[in-house]
Length: 246
Image 1 (cartoon, rainbow, N blue to C red):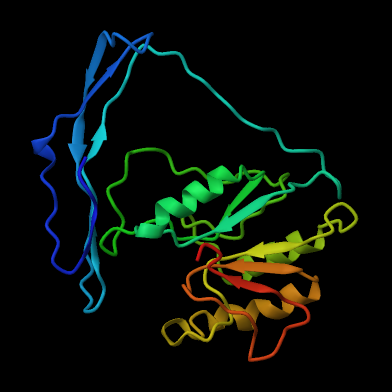
Image 2 (cartoon, helix red, strand yellow):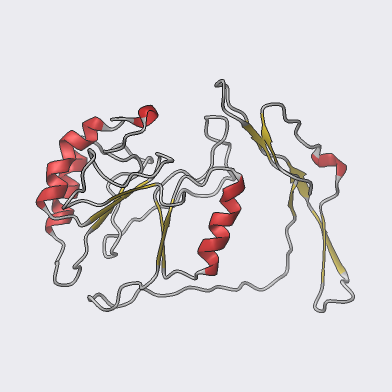
C-alpha cells in the first residue's frame, strides 16, 4: 500500500494505518475465506552525504493455510554443445530504484532458460538484516555447469581458493563445454574513479590463471557504468561486461 520514496527528506509510512487482510476462495465470487497478517515498512538510510535514501510502501504479509503445494521445475539438459540454454539473462546490482522492477519484469517477459546474477541484490543500512530464519542454501555438489569458488559461510581464500579454481578449470572438457564463462562481482578493469583497482590483489593473483585456461567471457557487476574497452583499446581475449542490468 502507498508509494515508495527516494530522496533526502523522506518520511516512512505508518504500517499500522492499513490492515493486512487477504480474502480468498474456490471461486472469484464470493470470497468466503479471510486471512489476517501483518505489515511493515523497509527503509534504506545512507550515512554518506550525497546519497539518496529509500523507504518502501507498506508491505503486507499474510499466510494462507490448508492449501495444496504446487511445484514447478525444469531439469538440466544433457551435456553437449547443442543442449545448453539458448536464452540467458545476466544482471546484477538491482538495488532499490525505479529501474529494479522494470529490470525484473523485462527478464521475466523474455522467459530465459538461465538467469545469472552477478551479485548485489538489495541493501540494508550498510549492515545485514535480521533475516527470516531460513537456512542459508548453497551449491554443495559439483556435477553442474556452475561452480562456486567462495561462499561467505566459510572462509576459503588464498592458496585454497586458488588451487580449487585451478583444479576446476583443468577438469573442464572443452569438447563438451566449448564456452568457459567466469562470474564474480567486482571487475578487475574499469575506469570509474570510485572503484578503480578496487580488487587489484585478486587480479594480480588470478588473471594469469584465467588466461592460461582460455576463459572466454567474464561477467561482473558492482560498477554501475558501461565499459566498452580495456585501457582504451579493444581486447582480443577477454570480454568484460560490467553491470549488465544497466
